Length: 573
Image (cartoon, rainbow, N blue to C red; front, side):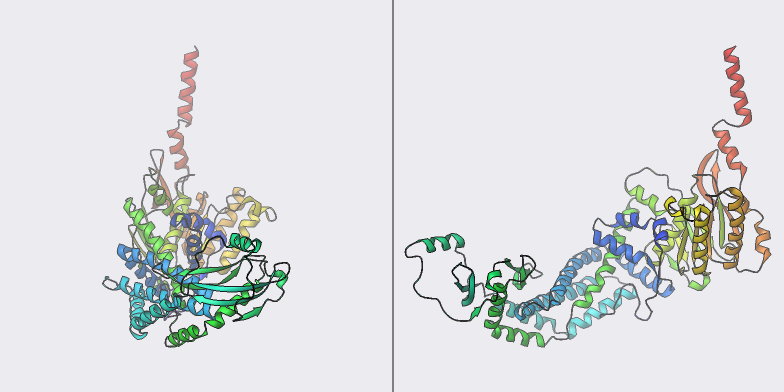
């Protein structure tokens, strides 16, 4: 059970590539995580999982199927949400159980609580999965596992033992103490007079103390019982902190016992309370022995391994909630079909940038433009050109997000998608100006490109966004031509969006220049009647036609400007 995962098949090594900070920033991972949950814990968990990208098609298929099961069963998701609360409680008990300073009685009661919570968690998982139409290997394996635990661990008998022993210990409701004082009224000794089955309810303890001390008959002649007397070491510090005994509830909210003694003083333990702790533990030895006898029968039962499911269930649950919200707003999301990673292919119809879909769920009125693209040997490297603000960056980022979501098993923003997993994702977007101080813009961009090529393989996904645009045109074009040749040679799936239309010209000659199993193709974003259409198509670069359409729309062609001048002159006459 300790090694079980809903993200990693048991027969696969847990191998992944961690995306760089630049890549996470370029794909807007923080923004996307912020839309998945308002809880900081959830956002951190999801971000950490997202940036660790698996590349095995076996692992990706495993995750895709698990997520599909969770998304298709709303009742299962509701049950998982409840299980997460139980698992979090189990996690808190695990933390207390590791505390070696707790007295044996507190450790035993913590263990009782842990076992009770563990039973609830296993039973909850079993009941949630049984009766559901589960297809994924991951959830079927989880169900088989909890069924085995349930049947082999004697849960019915264990539940009764916990109930009976917790009932006996819960009868202890109060302790009567006898405290000896010195001349300054500092406590020097403490002894337990009795352990009672009713709580002490008399109010005004401090008031009564002063009333007894100041009245004629307030002080008793003699001493109380000497039973279980303990001297307080370093009596002068006995009052440094006030101890608190924390109550731990069971899963049904009922009180089951005491967790441990904490000090609320200056961080040092309270000697008086420490001795009291020892006294109570010593007096309760018969109870401790009985509890140990009960727990010995279940020494192999441990709930700690279930805790590892918390991040994974959180990840799947939050994404399922978001996907359902997107589809409810009429935004398409689909299950990706996983191809062998060796094929290095990708097909998507009706794709869009996830961030646009999120804006629609916020109520923004957006005309969502859906596009299609494929990566295969005939066109595995795309040089993308188009007008400024024509959607090149949005489209480039959309491709990265589809790969990222699909490889984590999440439905992707498209009508249909098939992909061979990438072994990693590399992005090259414009950098913050503060990072270019030492090397200059051209030097900084060139350095990052070199780092990408030193790590990328022909199974990677490379996304370049207006690379080399920050230098003068001649220098940028000179370097970009060599980069495109290198991309052709590498054969990785690539989007290289650029304002340099010259890069996408004469591609037949480039593809024939040296042997490669991957060709370079031209991709353009279109303009219709002077308006940006945001439609993407495979076609030669349009070059000056973009500027001509825009100039005509706004009336700044030579003929239009001349006509305006003539009209103004006529009015003045």
